[in-house]
Image 1 (cartoon, helix red, strand yellow):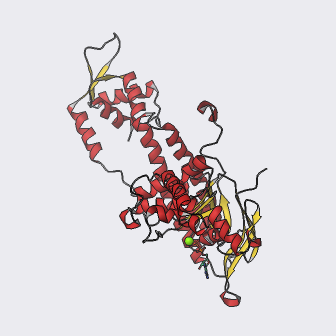
Image 2: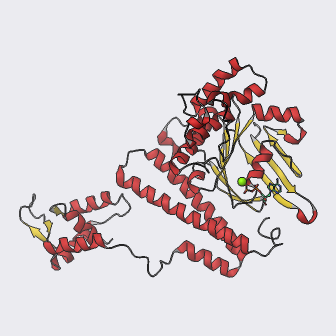
Image 3: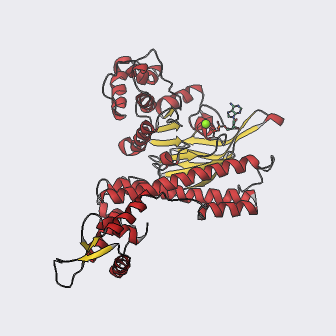
Length: 244
Length: 183
Ligand SMILES: Nc1ncnc2c1ncn2[C@@H]1O[C@H](COP(=O)(O)OP(=O)(O)O)[C@@H](O)[C@H]1O
Ligand SMILES: [Mg+2]
């Protein structure tokens, strides 16, 4: 049995203390299988972003544990965490947060170069990641040359470059018009089949969530319900007649 | 729409016999409304009695009646195209009433029902999306638009359930957060 890509075990996350304590997560149990596409929904303030921050090793749980590919993230030191974000887990946020002074390719190559890779080696990997998100042209232009949807594709390329296996996306369509947003979600939905990437998407939109293999609903810092996991594209389905 | 209005709309395209009307009606409505031939003939008899259609000469087969629309029938059809479906008085929507009744019992029960219904509806939306993807361009425009209608309705209901949840969470007295429905 392979380890789940992500596992939350009785995770509690508090901010502040005493009177001012806020429990952003209040006992989350959740597993995400490798290559699974999970959407997370829930009212504002229910802990969705906190969940992604913990999964990305950006913060530590107050209690409980978060595992990525079987590794307890709280056991990692600073270097281990940096390596985790460089090699395993990529994050895409709602706002378009590319570096304005770097070209598309340079933005995507950045995490590799920060990890010590030479620009000459990083560049072809960046080009491959950009191709995977459907961008092939004008890759030496700066972010403001691209539309909002294209910029978000570049951000996704930066999050998956170098073969990172887990993509965390926090309302990545929030700043996009609905047509472009549809395309970005379709792109995310295709990643598990295309490259085995595990995708966790936080979204408010039922339309986007419906692309997922499984939809998880949160409230008050906990998982309150979820749909059954039914992979949209099972890896071994030779005969379409047999699927139904 | 009634069967009567549907048949008038088809006859407005030209004369047709009963069985043809049955199959065209079913195709045009994307397969969501199967008719039996008896229903079609009963409706045609009433339309003929009311002067909306008449039987023409020149049937292809002996014993087969071919119907055509009359001027009066065309007028009734025109009025139907113009009429806008009215939601007054409010429809007795099953989902809405279920949630309202649950809230009447208690806010926590309301939240439970909202949660359950939402998960089921999202599951439905997932299935419809896959159906549509598998369908591709096959199955015809009507069938595709039927799927789109079901998806749009599920999305609207889901958005309404989100509103219900937000309102219920907000109205809940503080301090009940951990005594709620969680385990
Ligand atoms: N850094 C922080 N300091 C204090 N409170 C925080 C912090 N981050 C999040 N919170 C609180 O934790 C709760 C969950 O926040 P968040 O995970 O951002 O919710 P969501 O993304 O679902 O809207 C909220 O009540 C929020 O105010
Ligand atoms: Mg958030």
